[in-house]
Each structure stands twice: as C-alpha cells, then as structure tokens.
Amino acid sequence: MRNAPAIDAATLSTLLNELRLPAIKVLWPDFAERADKEGWPAARFLSVIAEHELAERDRRRIERHLAEARLPPGKTLESFDFDAVPMVSKAQVMAIAAGDSWLAKGANILLFGPPGGGKSHLAAAIGLALIENGWRVLFMRTTELVQKLQVARRELQLESAIAKLDKFDLLILDDLAYVTKDQAETSVLFELISARYERRSIMITANQPFGEWNRVFPDPAMTLAAVDRLVHHATIFEMNVESYRRRSAMEAKRQRGRPASFATMRNAAEIDAARQSEPNEALAALPRRNCSRIFNRCLT
Ligand code: ADP
Ligand code: MG
Image (tube, rainbow, N blue to C red):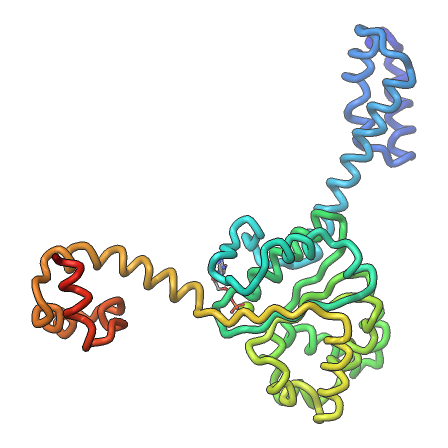
C-alpha cells in the first residue's frame, strides 16, 4: 500500500468521508501495511477495519447519549454502598441496570425515602449503566421539567414537547415531591405520565410516598389516576435509611473521638463529665442509665 500512488490515498480519503467511515479513514493505512506484510486475505482486512468502524460508532453513540442524559457526575453503581440500604437488593438493581424487558414494556421504578438516603445517587447510577448498555436516558429535576412543559403548554406545544421525550427509553424525574403548589395547578405532569403509560419508562425519586402527592397534582382524582398508572407496572424501593452524609460524618467523628476518651475514662462520673464538657454524638446516643455498666465492662 505504501507504494500505491499518492492520488489513490487521497481519493480513498474522499470516498471514506462520503461514506461516513471516519474510523476506517484513520486506520486503513496501518492495517493495510500490516495486511500486506503478513499476507492477510482481503476478506480479513475488510472485516477487521469494518469491526473497528462499528466499535467506534458504538463508542460515539454512548458518548452522545451520556451528554444528552444530564446525569449528575460521579454517581455510579460501583461507588454505591449497598450495605447502607439493606432493604435494596443489589442483585435486583443489577438486573434493572441491565435493561432487559422492563424498559421494553415501559415499566416504572419508584424510589422513596428521606433526604440523603441515596435515592438520586441510585437513580443516576442505574441511568448511567443503562446508557452504557445502549439505552437512552434523561435525568431531570421534576420541577425543571414541569417548568419546561408549562412553557410548552403556553405556546400550545405541550403534545409535541411530550412526544419529543419519547426518544428517551427512561425519564428520571428527581424529587417529585418538590413540585411547587403553582406548578401543580397545571396538569402537565399528569399528561406526561399518561402519555408514557405502558410505552416508555419513568423513574421517580420522592421524599414522600403517595400519601403526600395531592400537593403535586391539581386534584385528588388526578393524583389517584397518576399513581394508578405509575404503579401498574412498577418496582418500588423504599429506602428508609438515615442520611448517608450524616452517617458518614458521624462515623468519621466517632473514629476521631473515641479511642482517647475510652482509654482514659475510669468511671460513669467521668463519662458524664466528659459528656457535658465535650458534646459527643456517640456518647450522647448511649442511654445514660446503662452507661456505667457498658463502660465498666469495656474497661475491665
Ligand atoms: P437523596 O436523593 O435520597 O436525598 P442522595 O442520593 O443525594 O440522597 O445522597 C446524598 C449523598 O450521599 C450523595 O453524595 C450520595 O452520593 C451519597 N450517598 C447516599 N447514599 C449512598 C450510598 N448508599 N453509597 C454511597 N454514597 C451514598
Ligand atoms: Mg435526591
């Protein structure tokens, strides 16, 4: 190939541009040289460069899908501590993250729990895994999406705005319960849920389970109808755990504070004195009556 006239390479470049084969355009000279040197059959050369083009195409598609998904950065399944939410099965989450049939039939996932329990992290991490598996995902704060749909409604474009979201296999609506009262007065969220019902999936995170959703929709009948559609085909995770951040902070504090005070304390009176002079959450958490018994046992 190196001996081929320069004009051939230039023509080939143009042809590959027109055929939109950028990976082959970059890779063919080296592969051609290798194929000539090692005496590859022509079919092998062709299939090797075609495979590279395909792999590069997949990589670019996933990159595009990642950019459009607007996921919060750094939230992965690898960095999610499943031990912190024992009620959530890691195996079940992994099956969900693979995609499979639930997305194909437009089923939903609902994540409930108090603030800081890892709902948004888990939702974003599942979203990321799904994108890597070839699905299209959009992550949005619910209030922001409702705002956008309200603008579309004012411009008589609501239907087409909702239809545009159809390209996403999964819509992650973060913090549903934060929809404000004035946002709830229009029914755009209900229309979105109805339009996607049994066709396209929705994942919702919310601090408040259904009981409180009357604030989110214009009237109780609509709340009921929305909940009905959402739960018809749904997996619900109730993540009733203490805030992960708070727990991490307390753990760090405990590890800093504990050894010295344990090593030097002699009796319950000293412990009580320490409790007053240096408020310590680990100490404060211990029931006072049992303190001396627990510490005496520790110290003997
Ligand atoms: P929520 O959406 O339930 O309010 P977040 O997902 O925002 O909670 O979690 C708060 C912070 O704690 C985030 O930085 C998140 O990455 C972290 N976090 C929460 N739960 C876990 C967990 N189980 N493993 C690792 N990090 C967690
Ligand atoms: Mg959150």
